[in-house]
Length: 435
Image (cartoon, rainbow, N blue to C red; front, side):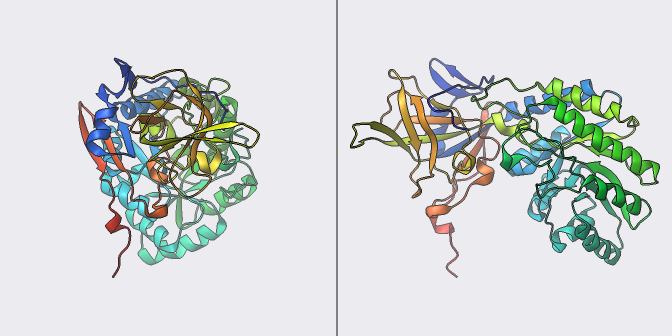
């Protein structure tokens, strides 16, 4: 949540200052803005690679006795260029819609490395998943009832997993907590246990048990407990004859935004906690471990660039002065601050001009909720200055809209000393089909 005048900048080996100017892997962000315009989403390819390596190494250290698969949660950022790189690294993909399934397959993720989650899959989405041969994580009895006739009609096996709700508190924002009984996600333990028995010899191929307790998890004990509960049910279902091959413990691996009151656990600590949970459940070593990080792979790899349009100062009848910095980026490019008060560190791209003072950083959209920060300490700014909102690689470009008839911002990736356009800037003419 927004922390008033606090302004902490998360450390990064990829977004650093050189001669006072903010760069992405050595490339000046100012040059990117001049070449591609603003607002502009910028991703660091090397940051994504480094994050993927950190997660895989944590799993090797935490659970060295078993194979593992890192399924990237595509909802974090579905740019095809990014997906192709992750597929080439050996990652799998976690999708939550028919559209995401289409793009995951097109990006080169093999079907056996794709899992399909989601509490409300349509018949068309279920049919596409069965045809593709991906693993479908079911979350209700109704979904199973809908899936059986689809698989029988197609004459194809439906690979499924049971997503259970372990009722473990991830101690995170309520909008991103998914592991408690009062959320819409998953099956109760009692129902999961019964379905595991019924599906062991049924028409669907029960190959995994999965759970996901939320995002930005700050307590490794919660992950250990969820992994143990999930693995215990997998062991039980296998003993009853189900061909269980995977234990999927979801995602939730945190990234730093700069406003944290305490340090998050390291990825090594997370991997060790998950391994402890699997061993406590006595999960056989041939049961593969699946994790589904999204934010952890791309969150800190991205920034959003905006250009200052105006500075505005307003004085209340009581004499209180309020400073507004109005930029060309808006909630249409990054909705997280408006949606749930999320904090993003803000940096001036070029060298600071003077002492900082509190200001509201706001966009041009015609909504009072269109803001990036309240009472944030920033130096004096003038028209044309560039600011960078940090840690926007996840749920930045992915959650954009065209509200107020604003075309989508461009998205670029800095890779191997060059720049790849992941998404060109939208055009006003293309917002509507006039028939």
